[in-house]
Image 1 (cartoon, rainbow, N blue to C red):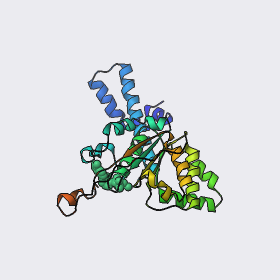
Image 2 (image 1 turned 90 degrees about the horizontal axis):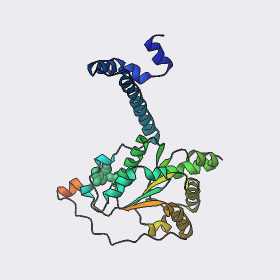
Image 3 (image 1 turned 90 degrees about the vertical axis):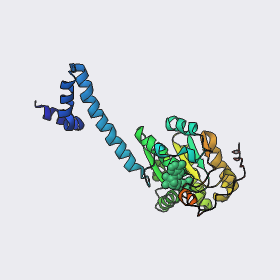
Image 4 (image 1 turned 30 degrees about the vertical axis):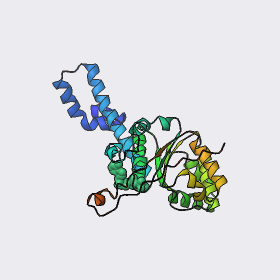
Length: 261
Ligand code: ADP
Ligand code: MG
């Protein structure tokens, strides 16, 4: 059989594209048969992995691609970079734990949430990004169309679900209860990364009911890392540099509320 035909049958599409250069390199470096095979298969593997990452990134529906490498830790000294580095190892996704990013607008909550999502895509996990508003709209629609069960089941596919912007809009009891159902489904099975501009003490207000909020926090925080970012808005950094905006007033220390037993 012809080599091209064999590669086609074996679906070695990436190797078939770069075969000439792999052979040329092997000749130059005088590789033995075994080392040549390693090079050839590595080229195929790298291509497949890269394609897989691209597909997962597209399926995640991130509003923009942000990476941990782009994050300027010097600008956010309250953030412990060791904790972020630890999270970037993806152990929390493997263990189906949650990450909660809290802080005022502009401190990089969404950036970090997306960056952790990007890392998860690179590590081979399925990811989905939704704002809380999108999520609730889709949950309500699914309920109205009698397919809530199926939708909740679909929301289990991504091993990491990012829910951005909790706290900007108050929820009705019905919405809070839909959110709680989603949380129960994913509890100890799959990870959530949540961002919120409100401290846990204010979550009773967001969920329209302190009992519901405490049930939600109980599940959410059982296996979770919380990052409380207390810095300046990065969005206003440039303006501040130019001296056109006053710095943010210091925020009083907040203690996260203990989850209900
Ligand atoms: P938040 O979600 O907390 O309101 P964002 O994550 O949307 O804030 O950050 C606002 C903008 O500033 C984004 O474009 C983000 O990429 C950028 N940004 C925020 N913090 C940093 C940082 N420490 N280093 C680099 N870029 C940052
Ligand atoms: Mg945000």
